[in-house]
Length: 142
Image (cartoon, rainbow, N blue to C red):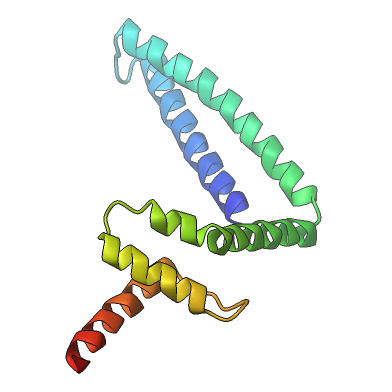
């Protein structure tokens, strides 16, 4: 749905640009406002380019609207599930490569990942927070 909204915004913006450039040329032709040849050429090129993009986006929008909305939502849901699965699948490797954390923070996060039950998912940020709390409580006990 986000794609459709973006296309609609672009279509509206391009239509506005075309109207503005057309008005400049019309005003120049009527003698109401004189513009230089360079400005006129720029306006004509802008109209040509924007009309091409407008047709392109209108075609894309038409094709998207023809598509079954359910299939689009299923596709987006599947992509999100894949992103999430890969996020947690490669979490340990990503944490090991994190250069902004100290060796001890990384080690604590990796230990926590190893101790988690199967299927239990925690984001990186929360893992590091748990690691910090673990260190704090460990030092408090000693």
